[in-house]
Length: 181
Ligand code: AR6
Image (cartoon, rainbow, N blue to C red; front, side, top):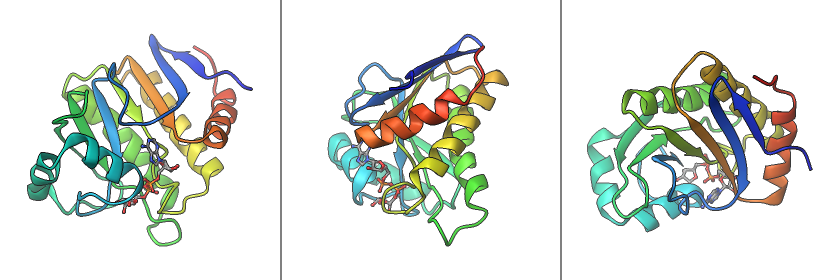
């Protein structure tokens, strides 16, 4: 197994296998949302179930959002302060896919920094229902987060919360290609 942690410019990138709705030590978690910001399958379904019905109500005035866009709401019954809703690209439809996926990660970190959130958890956006190949998505995700931290975005901890052991391994391989420091 490759390493699952990297220190970057005073911040930390962590990779864990787990459930994005069960990260009580994080200020914010990112939702792999749909354009309408409503409950769906996968991450969005789990986040809305755990947060309760007030989340969908809070989302309604913010919708629709475009691929690459990120908006914030209260987290309600989730054990975090905020939910950052990111709309990833549908693979094969929304182009340029890599730029749109990078915008989700970059935008979520910029928004977290603006809101004074120190720690953020990400799922593997677009790699489920939206069909983005896992290895390519992990490379975009990790290089984008790394660049943002090197650039001083000011988020202390970025945790990738991966559902499967395979996804954890794919992210660990991508993490291994990043420079230390
Ligand atoms: N915690 C962490 N990761 C999870 C969880 C969880 N609880 N549940 C699933 N994953 P997806 P997308 C993984 O489909 O591709 C929804 O229906 C999953 O195994 O949630 O961006 C929305 O309503 C996969 O690796 O997000 C949208 O319509 C990854 O999270 C659409 O799907 C992302 O899977 C968004 O599709």
